[in-house]
Picture 1 (cartoon, rainbow, N blue to C red):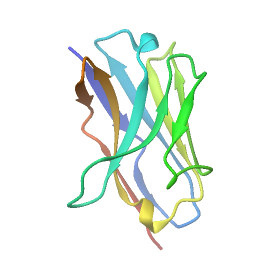
Picture 2: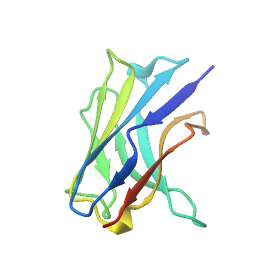
Picture 3: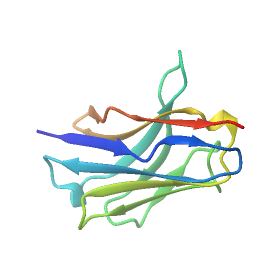
Length: 116
């Protein structure tokens, strides 16, 4: 059974940093590209970062490019999102995602709140 569990969210002041983690189980993590999404209240989830199986390829949405870094530790079955220079507009629930055969697996999400 595929499981994804995010952690690391919380409250931070503008300009601060957080590192999100996503522990994966139930599938061969090292063979799966992974993604981070976020969702604002009342909005659809938006894709913000992707990573290939061995970190050769990464992609970032314009809204986070240059501030966020996606990475993975295949030995620990863990996906990360380092978030720097956080802005109030980054306040959202953050989700890790795995897609297989057009089916999306999601974790429960972790709330990130950026405010002074």
